[in-house]
Image 1 (cartoon, helix red, strand yellow):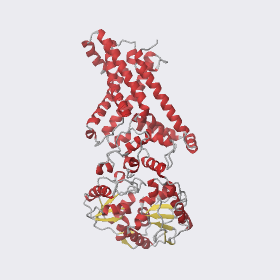
Image 2 (cartoon, one colour):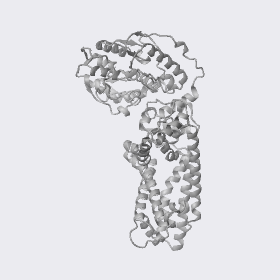
Image 3 (spheres, helix red, strand yellow):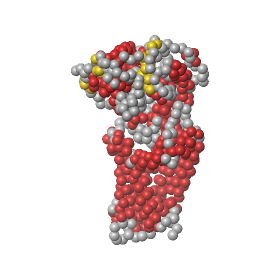
Image 4 (cartoon, helix red, strand yellow):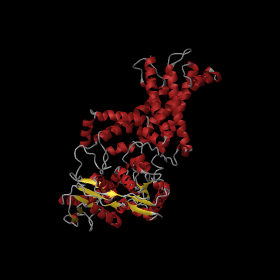
Length: 615
């Protein structure tokens, strides 16, 4: 039997258009990938990475596990729409194939209730029951979405995303699809008696209220409206935020094949940018929005503006790059990297000879297998430098001082501003210095330096440690002993050390050795930024102080006698606002040291089978 009615045309046109655009976009982005990324896909596609990607698609694209972790109600809303619609398609396809037979056209599956030849006058129809249950599930998600737009705070969101016109068109069509489906299937059930518990009950009401002639017109009209809603949504989707539905899936597979965004923009960035659903979960955590009422620069707007070619300097540069939004992003988009390559694309200096004058300059002192790189900000906080000197001396460690008497920057501030080439000149100079002096362990007190040393320097044969990791290793090796006192501490997780480098436990373990530790409300991956980020070149000093004051107030609410941090930049920011003592963790350790018998060299690697002495 040939199942057809003119109302299927809007749906078919929209569907064909959508898939043509999606295939064109995917094909272009994949074709433009660098050769190494294409080889990574070839190697990964037949590996276990593909199975892991399939699992992640189910858990994140359909079930939205990460959103559930942040907000269960929002998680249900997204899951009911995504997973519910997916199941409607799958179960509907099975039902149509069972009743109409295989090989029926696509539209006959989508509009099955209309083309269903059976008149179910008796008995229970399990397919109709399941389909009504799934439709009710999706409708509950639509109702929550409507409610979120009007009363977002009730769903745990202070701010929701401001949408552009194409998003509003797609959103309006999406919100109409399932109520119109309910109406169309219920009107059809009034005549064919093929509905479930929901559509069948509504169909009985329509049958009682309407004459057969009116019912026929209403049914045809409802199916036309449903088809138009589908068609409009499918045409708008590739150009709206809903492109994430078809972009998040390949993004998950590509990430599993170890493809990532880099300092230089590349076509893979498009998968990340268009995988953003603009859910708005990244807005509330942003301290620029919360403390300064700046509402147009958050990651959701950065990605939106970059996608549509409307990115401005203000949006690009006005970001602390603290990583709070990236930690919350349910899609796992590399937001900081995309910011960096946007800045690099616009700002990078053409003069590749910048900083060449540094070649050959060596202001280092001392000798030893352990090297210490204080960093610019540590040199501006002398108490940290003196404390590290005392710790080295107490441990009997012979140290090569890279910059105690002055040196060069690590290069990360330049990188954060987008001047990648200039940063590389500094990195080359520093790396040559490390290699020249033959160190095997490089210690730094600055998380900013730590991150760039680990990620950009390619220091093969040189282990890079933050001073909290290094001090803890000394303690575990028996080369330092920390005496406990009665002092109470609270600890601030620096952005680059915590979210940026995943170092949370070593600082806390050291603090607990010296006294009592109480964490603030926001800690670890949720820790607040101090506001003095080198990445933001837009906000002024007063605005930085306001962000730092809000963060410091939360730390002081713990009632601790001393606020401890492990970043010289954070320390300077907290000191400006604190009414209690502020100290670097090296100061706390140095003040609680008890002489210990020197043991093995801390720079030695653990023996085979031995537990590494680093948290």
